[in-house]
Amino acid sequence: MRRAAAGLSRVPRLLLFDSVLSRLGYRYATAVGFVWGFVFSVGRIERRDGLWIFRGMPRRTFGRGGACVGGCYLTDRNLSDDVLEHEAVHRRQWQRYGMLFPVLYLAAGRDPLRNRFEIEAGLEKGGYL
Image 1 (cartoon, rainbow, N blue to C red):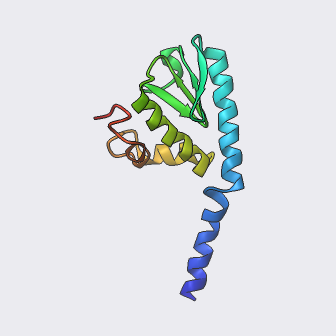
Image 2 (cartoon, one colour; image 1 turned 120 degrees about the vertical axis):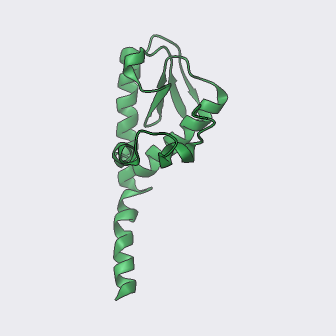
């Protein structure tokens, strides 16, 4: 009985995490990031290591030093190699969780020192330490 219950508890994970559904959510988020970036960016747009980077974003269009939306990184000029490595981890988190990622991220809390997604991406590389 316990094995059957354990097997059933894996079903939502199989459907939601690193699945076709999460990849669709990632693609949708990337499309939203593209639109957001194209509308507000006044800087250069480039692609590095699978991450679309939109520079010259007005401060009101992103949080902290920048925002990763799907495969897009939106920022004014926060572009060190460490920060881009940090944002690449967030890109992978978007791929894994799809549109659940923003919900899970908010549930993890606004304090980056306690937010498991920021910790996974690297607090030092993200400029939090």
